[in-house]
Length: 76
Image 1 (tube, rainbow, N blue to C red):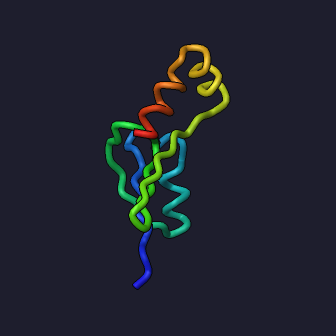
Image 2 (image 1 turned 135 degrees about the vertical axis):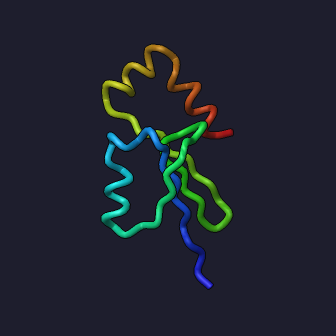
C-alpha cells in the first residue's frame, strides 16, 4: 500500500497562492493555522516544514535575526 503525502498549508498563506497551485495539481491539502512554517509535508513517517520567503522578507529576516529563530523552530 503506497504512502500518501499529507500537505498542510498555513491559513495565512492565501496571498502566496501556494494553496491554489497545489489544488490545481489536484494535491489534497489541509488549510489551517500553523505555529511554525508556511507549509508542512508529512510522508512516510517524516515531517518537513517549509518557510516561504520572498526576497524582501528574506533580507529583512536576516537583518532582524528573525530568520535564525524561524530556522531553529522549523528544526524543532
